[in-house]
Image 1: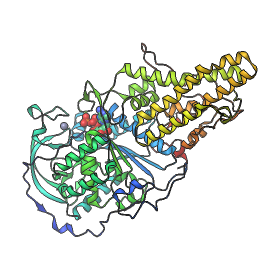
Image 2 (image 1 turned 120 degrees about the vertical axis):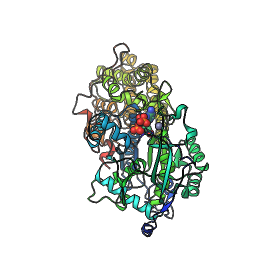
Image 3 (image 1 turned 90 degrees about the vertical axis):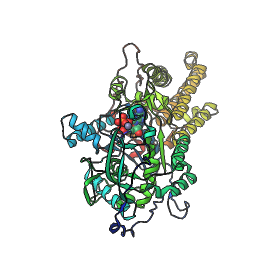
Image 4 (image 1 turned 45 degrees about the vertical axis):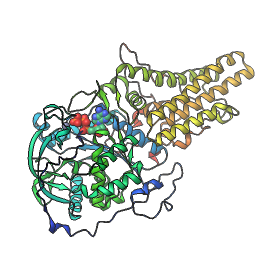
Length: 612
Ligand SMILES: Nc1ncnc2c1ncn2[C@@H]1O[C@H](COP(=O)(O)OP(=O)(O)OP(=O)(O)O)[C@@H](O)[C@H]1O
Ligand SMILES: [Zn+2]
């Protein structure tokens, strides 16, 4: 989806309304549909009686209702950049966390491929729109692979099943009486693919996001009667504050709605590269009225027939739309009204995160001020990239990238605090205990307050993951590692080994305590750094298969058993040298560690996902 900006249509528009009355009759199928979900808040938009009859989900057991989450469908006017990667990495961390909890997850991403901007980009590169879309869409998939993104569905808005869904959806909305025809005249930003209100534009009628002049346009379009949903949207935002997150974004959305909703045009007369409007193939459907439906049509994958009833039974509504704040209006105002019109349930939450900026400006394809995620992955490895952006840029706030900050943060967290502690401990264990654990970790920690400290921090991390406070989750887990380092330094087990006897036994127990902390960290940090977590887990003497079937429940203290033999102490994360830059860290030697995400187009599943 393009970073099209969110301004309502100018009131100067002249509407020559011609209602399409013959098509208004088929409303009988339009009923709000309730998918019973597992937690009470999911009932807030549906018409079912109570949450009491929802099935509780035992830890580690997949629920029957999937946790459906989405990234935006990225606009294929240009290849992905760090901004597109940011949303997708965050969504992947959420998906991995939910899988660890034992939920069945459907993580949807994909590409938005219609519209004028795409046709122009294709012409500029000398290719047909469809070849252009194939190539750019493939570049998104390749990047997701490089970043260990374990998506379940990759929907392209040029997929035939998506086009069927869009047509059916359009027909439902038409049948509801929410589409009419009118003349439209205004200033249009091609990069936003949107008419703009003049007073929002900057000097020389330039779009404030894309800094390019808008062009005067007049056309005869079909309109969606958004204004009909004014009261309903006000009520939804009042009764369900968790619908839009974080809270600052909710206020923004309330402001837009309270200032009065205006109908918006959902077709384009001058754009060929799009889905033709049913019953009028001189017009194509507006990219947003097409792209948002990708979240729905992704749920029809694998079905012989793509229709709205099927997608509902396959998991709609989504639990979470994770998006950038640039497209909040489309998701938190247009989209719920469209869904209400079509008789579909609303997503539970729309979370609008902040921007990665460069020199204070939103990094974006149209401005071209982007950072190449592939270069970062090549230089520093995918764990480092994921860790830096999730830890250092709070989801919801803007954040500027600098290489210095990147290197400092990653070296401090992954190389020193975590990697070095594991390496030191395994080195001592090898030297003094033949790499074998002396006792069960539950025994080693008897009466040790460190166990409770770690448990509290892990609970805190879990709460933060649940609330999408990914940066705070990282902080809590780093505190776990810090506590381990402090313990190591205070206990100085190397002296105990020197003394021998009971002191050596105590030292051997201390190593077990620290390695148990490492085991817990490997599991709980795996949504953020899946590759690093796998390496850690394997050094602790577990197999790759064991890693893929772990659950959050297994992060409880006590997983390491006496007699377990640890792997060879090898650095799991190499410090990045500031002068020479980094080198993507080696993957584990055993088996095929990059299976932290399978390198395929489809559903690379990790850990508990394997059970789901
Ligand atoms: N600078 C950024 N910071 C954070 N997220 C971004 C950034 N740029 C893009 N995104 C993500 O991509 C989405 C927009 O996707 P799109 O394909 O339109 O990319 P874009 O680079 O913003 O495009 P354009 O520059 O043409 O407006 C945002 O909602 C957000 O999820
Ligand atoms: Zn614009």
